[in-house]
Length: 172
Image (tube, rainbow, N blue to C red; front, side, top):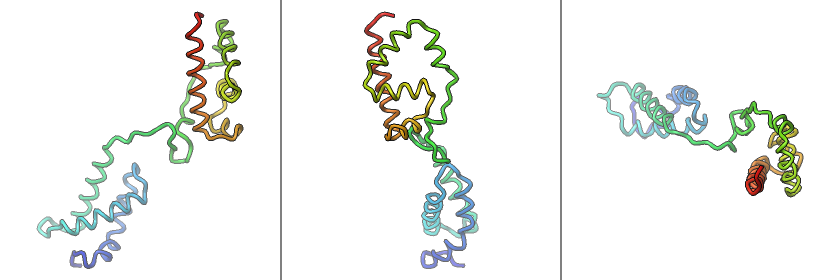
């Protein structure tokens, strides 16, 4: 088959197994996004291909491999509000072995903290209670309160900030 833009549809169909294998190989990318990007790279390869460089298949294979290898090296910052491959929030997968309730009950100074928690607005107090005393996840609290898990996380942070400020004003 002659390599040209005129028969690019045939070339894409012929090299689809290579494109699919490459998309599966680099799992850091969404599969369909990788397939689409591979098709674009195939069109670029058609324009760049020189028969003196060897077979088109090897040329395309190396072009795809090195492109996705370079893209994989780029640092993808993610947020704890993002979701993992199973659709669960990343923040839910964090584990903490610290027993907040035991520490709270063992410490006399926490009477003051308990008083400050009770002074919080009801929604913030409910979130703190469910999160730290009932060990509920943001998702569970959100479902219970009819708000999103992100709202729960934001309100939890707000409540902790208020508590920290209020406790900083007194000497324990």
